[in-house]
Figure (cartoon, rainbow, N blue to C red):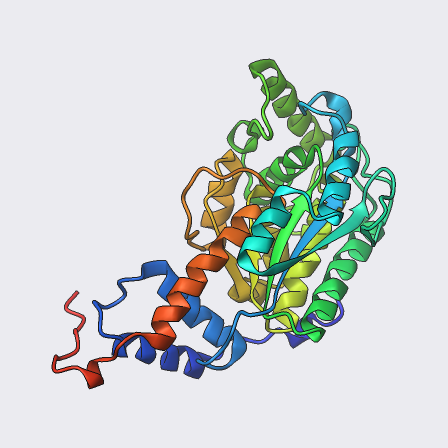
Length: 347
């Protein structure tokens, strides 16, 4: 895809300078754990050990999924538009968290059944097809949706965004995500399908059956990530895939949220392996497929709290932890100002 040749490795020199700064802080080595690693990684992304995460953009990709017709959700597709409108009006859960953590929220219609006022229109089609019976979208539609996500990342970074949060809203999208995960990782539906927003035992059985039939109907090739997306995914997943790729092109960190966001991240890495270096994993989702996706990506989520809200909420919750780490990184006392020797690595 156009522009992916501009994704380059992290700046190792900047990362080494960031590690040295951490070592100079008067505290036990690596005592802030994964948060220290995140700061070092961001230094490599930005190309400098001195950076800010002041301008924060949470992008909520909204789309409907035709597989809802298989009885795989507790609510109907009309809820997608309802919640998208609430996000656009600043009243949803993601808006409350964004206000608390200093982020702007952008709701994007990637493929809802009907347009909603106040939501940015990047609509590729009126929802996806029913994956249990055929493809979600055409390959061309998948490529258009990915390109739209990349364009949004470009525009946000051009407007000064220091960090991007990849969120979503779409009834039925955990089914699409489970199907994509099964295809990419070669796992049976029983290992990837969870209860989503809350399903009964019977509902879970229908969901597993729908994913199994989707795999049979579409026969995805794990070596063709765009084909997997077109056959089994959603327009929200496609848009986030582009968001991850666009962030990498613009050397801006993109924070992964839960299962749906992880699915998009996995697709992005299959399309452009170096894009993984520009991603930060926020939390360990309780959805079954999430753990497998995190392991396949080789990332370590910072938060373990059983989160499953979506909308980018878990990714936003990483921001205050990063703020705390940066406060220590930039402002804590240093060994060279104290009458004590540095800690040394004895492990």
